[in-house]
Length: 349
Length: 97
Image (cartoon, rainbow over all chains, first blue to last red; front, top):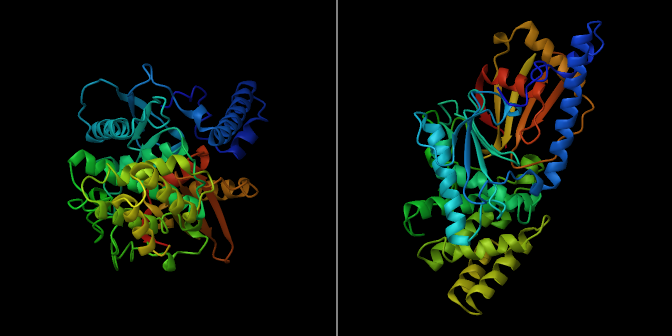
C-alpha cells in the first residue's frame, strides 16, 4: 500500500461518498471523512503547483549522482504510485524482470546523458530516477507523470510489458529532461516538438547502448513492446514510410513526414504524437547524412537546440535553432550545417 | 448503456478506444460511474501533459453522453479506480485518430 494511505478511507472512496460520510452521526467516521477530503484537496493543489514548478518535484539523490529507485505498483491504479520500494541504487538483481529492466534501463538513460551531454540526471542536479512497474491491470502504456516513471505490463496482445524496451524508457525519461529545460507546452507544434525530442533521445540512447551507427540503426520506436495481437512491428518510424498499415487495431500509421501533410485537427492535443513525425524524419535525414554515430553530432545539435527553445517554440523556431546550433558547433558551410538545412528543406521548410 | 475507455498520451501516444463489456459490470459499478460523472460534471479539464490519461465515455440508450476524464499526472482516486475496473472488461480495441 502506498505510504500516503494512513487513513483507510483516503484511498478508494469517491467524493460524493466522502461528502455523505462527513455528515455521519458517528464522530470517528465524520473525522476520517473530513481528513480524507482535506487530504484529497491538498494532493490536487500540490500537483497543480508542481506542474508549473518542475524543480520542486525533483527528488534529490543522496550523493547528487545516479540514484535509481524502483517500486512495484502491484497492479494498482495511477493515483496509487509509487507503490512499494523493491530495488534501490546498488541493490542486486531480483527475480522480477520488469523491476530489473526499469532499474537497468533508467541507469542507461542516466549514463547516456552524463557521458554524451555531461548532464547530471533529468534536472542536471542529480535528481533520483523513480520508476514504478506493474502499474494497473492490462495497462497498455507507460508515462512520466512529472515526478516519476510508471510502466504498465500491457495486455499481452496489443502490447507486452513496457519495461522491455530501452527506447520506451529513454523516451519517457526525456520528457523529464524537456520539463527541466525548455518545458515545451504539450499541445500543437510545441507539443509535437516535446514528443519529437523524446523520440529522438529514446532512439539515440538505444543506438548508443548497442553501438549502432546511423546507417545500422532501424530508426523505429517501440519495436520490442508490440504484442502478438497486432501486425505492427513498431509504433513509430523515423523513415519516410508508415510504421504499420491496415492493422486490425491500429489501422495505418497517421504520422506525416512532410509539412504539407501536417495534422490540423484538435485531437491528440493538436496532433502532438502525429506531427512529431515531421521533425523526426528531419532528424533521421540529418543523422544519416552526417553518418557515423548519430548521438555524436546530430544528437549534440539537437541537445543544444533543446536548451535554446522555450515553452511555446514552434516548428519554425526549431528549424532556426537547429541551424544556429549546427553553425555554432561546426561552423558555417560545414557538412553538419548543410545536413541540417537540407533535411528541413526535404520535409517542407 | 454503452461504455468505452479512451486511453491517450503516454508512450503510446495516439488515443486507443476500448469498448467495455457492460454485461460484465455489476449494478454497483454502473451506479458508481453515474455518481462520479455527476460529481465531476463541472470539474475543470486537466491541463494536457505527456503523461496522458483516460476518458470514460458513457452513452445512454436515450443518446445522452457523459464523460469522465483523468490525467495520469494528477489522478483522482475515484476515476482511477473506475478506469481500472473497466480495463478488466475491455473487449474491443481501436485507434481513434
